[in-house]
Structures are given as C-alpha cells and as structure tokens.
Length: 449
Figure 1 (cartoon, rainbow, N blue to C red):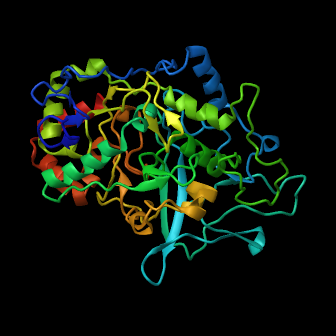
Figure 2: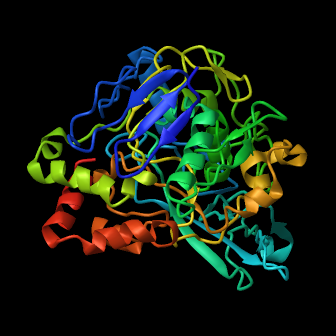
Figure 3: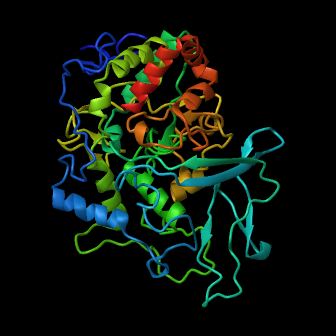
C-alpha cells in the first residue's frame, strides 16, 4: 500500500491517493493533461447536472437557489440578499459575482481578535458573536414604524474588511476530497519549500453531525467542510432564514415568521437541502480551450509552475471513491462525484500571503448551537491562526472575475500577483524577474483558466 502524499513544486503535481498514482498536467506539455488514473470531473457552464441527479431535478434545485425570499418567508430581520443567486450568478447561477460583504472586529488587551458588539434599536439590543455586518434590514416598516435595527459599525471596531462572493462551481468535487489528502498536501508543501510555504489545516464543526469535525475547505477562512453546513450558514446570515440546522434568529425584533422559516416541502427536502444538492451537482468551471491552446498560454503554464505558483495553486486533486462516508457520516459520496480528477488550481488551505484581514472565524455565527459544544479537534488556538490567513483562491474560472483577491479590491491579474507577499513572496519575486513577454505569457495562461 503506497502512503498518501502530494509532491508539489516547479515540477508536475503528483498525488498518491490510496494506492493509485494520479498525475496532473506535465510542465513540459502544460496545456495537455497527462492520462489520469481516474475520470475527469465534468466541466461546463451549461446549467446541467454533473450526473449526481437528473437534469430536471437539478433545474428544480436551481429554482430554489434562484428564488427571491420575502418577509413572509422569513427574510431578515437582518440580511444582505434575497436569494442565493443574488451573490452567485456569473456567468450563471452558482458562479461568483461582484457582491461583497462587510466584516469587522477589534483586538483585545491581549492582542487577540475580538468579535464586535453592534448596537441596534437605539442601543437597546447588542448583536454579538459574529463578525458579519448586514447591509439590510426589514424595518422600520408599516408594522414596526419605530423599530430601528439597521446595523452600523461602531468606532470601536477598528479591524474592517470586505469579502467578495465565491463561485460555487465544482464544489461538490471539493467536498469529496479526503481530509487526509489536504493534511498530506499541507505537510508536503512545508517540507518541499523548507518551511517557506506551509498551508494550515483547520478542523471545523459539521453542523448536521453534532460533535463531529472535518478539515475545512469552504469560505475564505475554510470555515466549513460540508456544503449543507455552508448552505445553512449562508441562509441564516446572508438572508436571515432560519433552518433546522440554524434555528436561532440573529435578532427577534420585527420578526413575525414562524421558526424555523425553512421547512421540508412535499418532496421531503427543505430549501437548504436543495441548495446543497444544487451545489454538489454543479459542474466544474471549464477552461477557455481556445485561449489555452495558444503558444503564449502554453508557455505561461510552464512558467507558472517554474516560479512556484503551483505550490499553493495546485493543479489537480482527486475525490474519494463512491460510497465513502464524509461529513461525520452524514453524506455518502455518489458515483458522479467519486474517484474523479479535477483541476481547481488551489489547495484549499489557509496561507499568509500578506493580505490577511485580521478576522478570526466567529464560531457562534458559523456553527450556531454546535459552537456550544465544539468538537475536540476544533482548537481555539487553531482558530486564532485564521486571523491573517485566507484560503488560497482556486483559479478555475478566474477569467470571469473582474474583482480579485479575498476583498475584491484588486482588479487586474498583474496587480493580484504583485499584491502577494509572505508565503508567496518568492513566487512574486520570480514573476518580477521574468522578461516582460514571459510575464505576459503567465497572464495569458491565467486568462485561459
């Protein structure tokens, strides 16, 4: 039995998954994948299922994802958007967007991050336990003309950042990557770079499996391992809709809908179940095959590896076999997601690349009641490590992003590269040393992703 490991560097990515060798794209032929040991994950922007469900079911799930919520449905009282699609819609439902959210906090006397206290209702109620500041509220309105609940940032909250919405395409395959693969990848990164690049693995609670934890991979801070947990979190904190996973409102002021707002329909699935299934069945982002075949993009692909970008922007990963139980046993990987090779150009680990926002994962916000009994693996010290680290941005589909990096404030690919520091300083220096035409080749390669 060959032990699991991942070798990352200027050469090709090589991953051992179980006893099977999986090859990524060879540096000497960078636009042509080597023959994979496992089938390729389907990739397209065609609104069709990756095979996990039939296409009519996938379209029905998309309908739930696109559905606009109203106050009668439980919207708010504090919220950012009225539908999932509002933040995930480019080029179609499930993609990213230009929409950003606001997060704040401050440092305590011990120089550790502290969640903010946000006063609402003229200071009569304090919103705590979360870093998110909602941009919208459902009142004052006709029923509550004198109730002022709009959140505003107090002067005390001196750590402030925006975060841009992430694309969800291909995340079903990401969810199906074994925890051990990411653990081994972090170890090998650190070893192969002599400690210069060391991705951080963080264990997080699985909300639908109380008491269980897994290796985080979703969200800018890797705050979720499960797409169902991720969906429930977003439904509450971005739209104010309570579910069986997150049954507690952020505030009850102006709230008139019965709890939980989201309940199973005639098919036995609640909206949050449809969201998770829609994401799991979404295909991976495809490349621009025309641009990828150009000599410049081919050359840039090799240079991308040579200067060390592929250490974190890992080209290829492989999912666990079909039938494998993940998410604390709450989900079994279906055949459509099992033993598939995909190309995210990301390692889904946390890194300090000089752009950290100072925000630590707020446990009450992201895990609700599960945060009251955190699994043993979820170390508070490990959570503190998230302050100045962000998840490596997967580069698949980056050609469709007009705003880059975690905060969306960078708008060109060149500036995004040059903004890197910390663990990415050596790769940035390698880019700077290249001739102008070689730099342009790398940019052309990125434009093909």
